[in-house]
Image 1: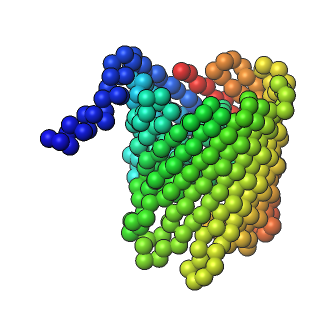
Image 2: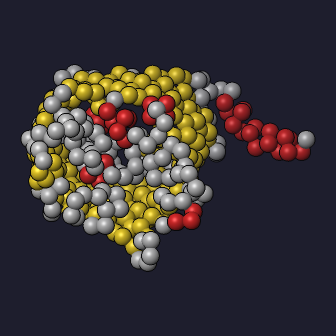
Length: 352
């Protein structure tokens, strides 16, 4: 009885506040269709295995089709997203078929009266990086190497606190490195943190981390990961992202294996309808912790895209991308080449 009484006391502030809050329900939708051409003409009609978006070549395809329902009750909120497309099929290939179709599905509750402290539980977008699965929100049509090879989503609990307008802090306990279900035999959850500082509307600085093991307990090897990026608005037309990932994982014997990836994206908005973006990037993973290619993983890439905002909800994009590895890694017939050039076009539509 005492336990129930104290529970009611703890919930009283939220219940009393909730009585005056109107519950709102929002419906959102998004679809990203594309056609890709790889000049190496791979026989399996697939882009390289370290890419998870826009992976089909020589045929029209749907990268992501998404329907989302969001509930907001003031002191609580919830989200249910259902998705399909090549992104969900490739990126969640290790999960059961049913679980491959959930996107941002969670419930959350405010833990203070000012509603600046929130606890969310479920599957939610990753706190790592500045690119998401929603392509229309990104500066480039394709995703960067660092985005493709770090988590797009996490499953577990997330505590988010915004003590001031300029600051956002988060702490996460999750099932692992982009997993819906924990790895069998691994009792150690993954842990994440985020610190974001926006001193004014022209600058954002972010530092996100992850720590955990992707091995069973009897083979435990810790993985530590840092993501840092800055978003700079240089003028009303020009803005850019500068980012860097660096991670290390314990070896089976002793020492650590290191991987790292720098990235820069410059976007120029010509007017309300037209925009361009240029990206230069690297991905270095000599030990093949995340990306294992024949020989050695030392990728360099450049891309250029042109965007046409046809209407408020409809976006057309075209992108040319060039990737090169230090050793032959890209399939062309029965041979391996050091480089890959691709052309990608996309129509995306959204509603809310």
